[in-house]
Image (tube, rainbow, N blue to C red; front, top):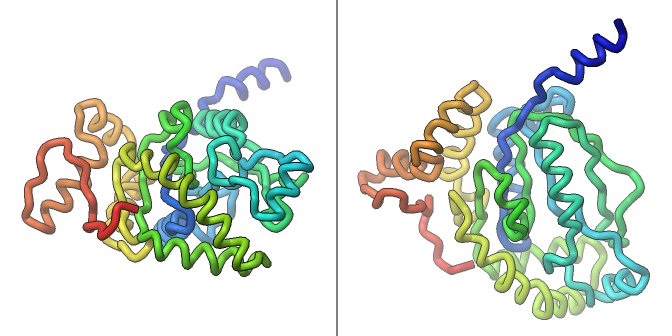
Length: 273
């Protein structure tokens, strides 16, 4: 009898979430955009066991450094913005398990000591999962898992100022921060992150200040939470994906017809990154 009950339990259909990738340069406002989406959906104060929308950061998947690499990191001489800095296999397997509706353990990372902590965070299935990070679109097998891809496009000077303030608050020396930025962060952004912008379904200039874009995305997520995921899937099959839906909503406001299939910039961007 017990074996029969166990078999039934294992055969129960798992919860398959809608996976959204959120990319952009360092300090572009990715996590702030995700937090605002959670807030507008009323999910930021919900118990994690009952939460319908959840956020995961790519930063949790930094590789465990060797003693030599950690010494470099403490001197600001390790490139954390390079694809090789991330444990792509662990990241992919974790996302795969999440998409299949499994409970997973998310690593935790200490940015002060540049170490993966022994404690992990238990992640429970959710209807919508936001996965944010500078290079979430770079590995092909990870990029192909996303049902929707967003790129937060913020002015480079704004990003630099935010980066400096953030790292100073983490106890780092200003000269070291600026040297690391010019040596590693900026070149890596231009080589690895910026080229992935072309994969985005929606580009969000100015990050959380662009409430037009965020409200449209929140409405789309709300439709999914209300049970309209099948409608979205049918739309994708027929070539009418989210970027066309957003484009048409933008046309209603602006009275401008976009060419069929053209990706929309919800507000004009003054600079390329």
